[in-house]
Image (tube, rainbow, N blue to C red):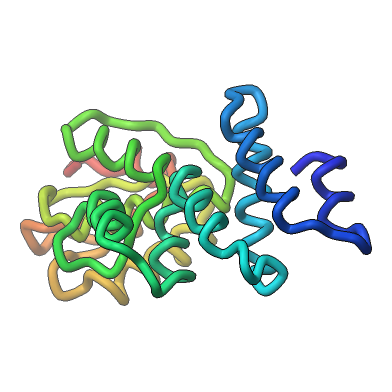
Length: 196
């Protein structure tokens, strides 16, 4: 969110309609689209400030592709909004809805194209990985992470969710026991293995 939008949000005579109008205008411009999306996220964070403008905010959430928030923050969804959520929930009966960038990456991966993804922490890379695993399409999944600490964090998350279906292999000396495996390795540990 740029300085002007930030100031607008904290002014004593804050006008929620004007804030949402500016967010909408920014989302209509490719050069400021990210700023508009950030404004929508900011509005969701302080939703009580938008009282009678909740329907406008809901439309902007959908327009910005932030469908997980549509699902979690609004309970008065119409048929069209529920259908949009279903379109952004790629695994049937899943509780997880992807946002537009996550869905784009998920679709590339599910089509079989390899992806090298470097994105900010808040982008939701883990959600894409978890949804891809949940799809059941792949028996062997390799996740390369930059640090040993991230191996441990990722291993714990995946073990909690997928241990009944997959072996989680995170060290070069672990042996493959199942047909379905998730390798969580640093580049160095990946290079030490000859079974992937």
